[in-house]
Length: 161
Image (cartoon, rainbow, N blue to C red; front, top):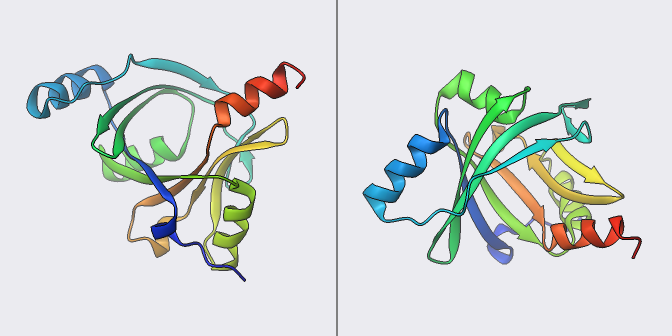
């Protein structure tokens, strides 16, 4: 089986879970000079599957460039997710490392062949958008794989292309 080679994938972002995104953005902006995108609110559909069950949730999220990668801030407003589990167990902090991939289905299969367990994913219109893998083998930090150009692919599918 092929190996999931993180050093060959494009590192995209570090994800932080926060209780109050406005306060976190203000702090990181002032302390480190980071320039965050506008904070967006998203309602994720029941298509998000966590540990085999639909887990819709509403989140606020923003990104700031940090050299060759980005810093992501996530605040969950309602619903249960991997993020709320993390907050309850560990408090605020580094939640995941995310890699952008050209073929998410292929890389998910590669990761699973290495014994990594996919614990959360979003697949809409037969397009897998993201997948998280259990952190038991990654020292407590989740690994997220994100399909490159996923927004464009989903919009094209919605437009019937």
